[in-house]
Image 1 (cartoon, one colour):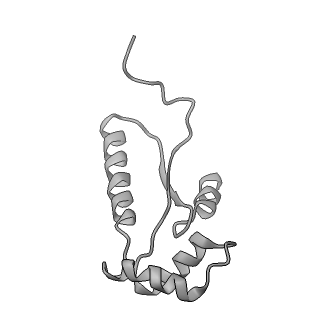
Image 2 (cartoon, rainbow, N blue to C red):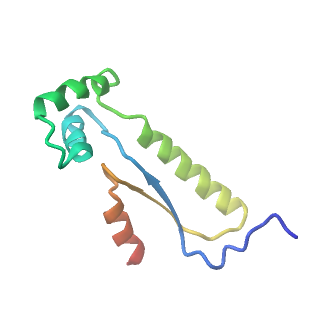
Length: 105
């Protein structure tokens, strides 16, 4: 039995992530997305956002995901696997709903 799996039944690979702000102006809107429906005051979000401001308002998760996507695409290409790789986040761009919409078009 081979260690290789048959990719034929798959249309694509979808990387799902939490998402994170890309700059200082994104921090509070990102936190509003994360806490939507929970009634957390904006002042508290600004306090929590200070943790992101220590890093320039940027979460490292997005760059980690970009690197992972590049590595997956490279590995797939080297293995001769023609399978699209997509990325969607729950709380920040690229949003999962937008990614899914793009995948079906």
